[in-house]
Length: 111
Length: 112
Image (tube, rainbow over all chains, first blue to last red; front, side, top):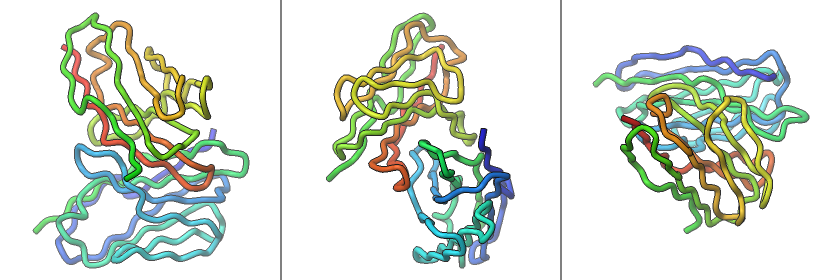
């Protein structure tokens, strides 16, 4: 079945630094979503992408739908302590009924 | 405010007990999902439903069962809990194919 890979698996950064993470697949997806999960909570939708090449921002977050339709990127600028959590990408393919979730990138922000 | 609710938030139960994890949503979503997640790990789809009286097994084999008698309610049942069932269970619902899911806060289950 369709699978997503996320890198890095985990990252430790200093407060104020910018963060980049990506999500890749061997299959084409028509929709990409980025979620954030705080410790002890359910994931919350951050950004949705629906068109190849699309670049969308939500505050300090910016996500892009890769032009090959097989990848997506999430950037966080000027990280703050509350950015800590797990970031999941999710993709929906041509004939998919359910979103496929990546394994997550675990972000730690050091003061 | 439309939302999705899971109860209980935390549950510690003895081996062999029957338990039901509750999930309700007030958004009128047809699609509902159960995911199993060990702390800090991946989300594993264990059950889903596309509407009333529709239930399907997910990608990860699970000894749990689900039912969908009402649109807003999607409970998950374990007939005989075991320590291997210790995990977090997340419920989610979705309105349309491309709109993504809204997740509940989860139930953290510990079987002793």
